[in-house]
Image (tube, rainbow, N blue to C red; front, side, top):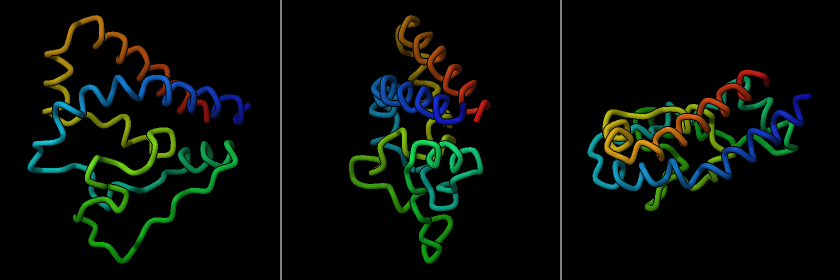
Length: 127
């Protein structure tokens, strides 16, 4: 069961990553208070279950980096991990500028993303 749930979640993350990235492309490049910090790159128990069910190793957190510094996976073009390999909180968290971008977008796109995020959350809850 976990393996099929993990596969479904991975597929949804891959299929809908472009929707999230449409909004992060608007909100993130000029951000002065980046939320992608080292202290947030923690893989929770369900993240570990998910990656293990997919047969993938959990990325190792660099404990020597300052907790309030940029996430070790943050690169010039955003996260170096594909969305399906990130802690789920990295996909689920929407800061105020990101929420504003979502609010300003066409309603149909916002509803599509909201529906996909709800499906992802439901599957994550099943892990």
